[in-house]
Each structure stands twice: as structure tokens, then as C-alpha cells.
Length: 339
Image (cartoon, rainbow, N blue to C red; front, side):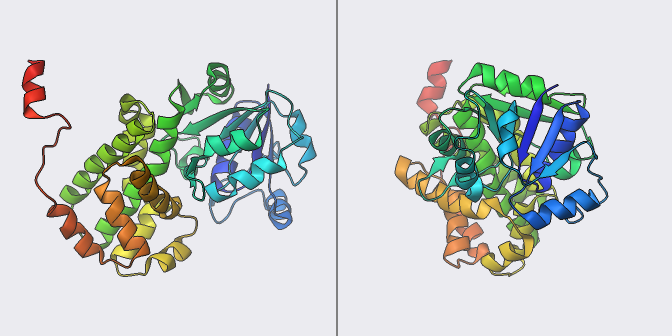
């Protein structure tokens, strides 16, 4: 039995705490908000995010940070914008070598850092991993069979996460490609926003299939340029996460996109839906595409729609009327040389 501290009491943090509790671990869930601690401790249900799902009494809900020192595994389940501040709170608290696994999907916008890089800067004494994949909190909290990936630069850290969290309802694979796993999780939110816009505009399955396929292509294009492995984007944290986020109404990114497609101003759509990681990720990805000289036409059009008031219909037209090109990255000559 491991001692697990979940930092963050939102929907995803609560779902993971419940999943770990089912595996027989000693689980505690921390929140920075005193009112949230009191409410969840009393009601034992996240009525807004996970209605009807009871939080077991065996899970401690606390605002005490010092007790994190006893944890064998710390799960950071806070929004991407809060990762640095939350990690900073743990300075001087964690024991040397504690495994810290991040489950947020995004970037630190100011410095264009992956979130594992942020944690490593703040907590050099920790062994950092990420957990990512097609995994809606609403389903994980109810024990719906789910598969995810634990990635780390440390094989031991990734395997520890796998050994600790894996059970009959949560299958955990390991992957050494930390960069690819993080980028797949962060960038698919942009494509999910775009997929929602297509739904809001009343477009069909053809459009969404094309968007998802070409979206994955540009995600992988940037990922490889940043040092990721191409094959990672064909896995759970690439195509797997992309499919579930683009097609499910559990996805806040898709729901925000639907509102935008129906004519709601992007900032208002984000306000109505709540935490929409794809909104900020679009800004970061656009900057990264410029930094690395990578062509990302869908991301570029999303950026124009979200931050420069471009009409979504015009954005789709401009994507459709781009110059002709081959689907494959190779040329005809390269192709026939392989024969």
C-alpha cells in the first residue's frame, strides 16, 4: 500500500483519488481552497463536476500541506496555469526522490515550457513523470475501463506510477518519450476546439475526420521537431486522446468550440464552459510553430479565430483553399526509391 497525495480537488484529481483508493492505497486529496475542503469533506460529492459519484470516506480531504512529506506518490492535478505555483508550495516539503506525476495538459505560456519542465525547475529533488491519455474524469470516477500512459525521463519513476495506479479499471502503459506524450496531450485540445467549431457550424463527419487527421499530422510535425518520437503520436496520447476529446461532450474544449461555431465570442465561450485548456494552448502552440519553423495551418487558423476575431467560416475556407500538396511528407521520388 502506497501513500498518495493528490494536489487539487477538481474533477480529474477527485477521479484519480477514487481510482487509487479502489486499489487499496492510503489516499489524501489537497485543495488550496478552504471552502472546497469543507464542502467536499461534508458532502462527499463533487456535485458540479462529478454528480452522483460519492467520494469514499477513506479518502482524506485536507488543506494541510505539511503532511505531503509522507507521500510516496504526489499527483499534481491542478490546471496548467497553476502548476508552477503548486509545485513551488512543495519546495522543502517533499522527501528526496519522491515521484511527482503531473496530469494537467498544456504549457506554461510565458516561457513556452512543457509542464514537466516547470516542475523540474521548481522541484529538482523530485522524480517527475506525467500521466496522459484518453481519460475523461467523469468515466474514470465511475470505474469505466480506461487506458493511459505514464512517461518520464526516469524508467523507475514511470514504472512506479504504473505499478501503483494500475488496476482492473485503469491500465497504465509506460513510455520514455516524455516530450511526445506531453505534446500530444496539450496540442490535441486545439484540434478539439476546432472540431467543436465545426459542430457548431453544422458541418459534417467528413469535415471533422479531415480536421482530426490533418490535425494529428501537424501535432506530430511540431513534436518531432521538438525531439519527440513519431510513433508516440500514433498511440494513446496521440490519436487516442485526440479521438476522445474531439468526439465527446465531456470535452470542455469541444463544448467551447461548439459555442464559438454558433457565433459566441471566444472569450465568452470559454467563460461559459469553464477551464478550457485548448484556448491557452493555441496561443502557445502558435508561438512554438514560429519558434521552430513548423507549418501548422489548423493551429494558425484557430489562433486567428480565438485571438483576432476571424470568422470561423472564413478560416475553414482558407484551410480548404491552401496551395495543393501531397498528403505524405515524402516526395514521389523518395517514395519510388523505397521500392
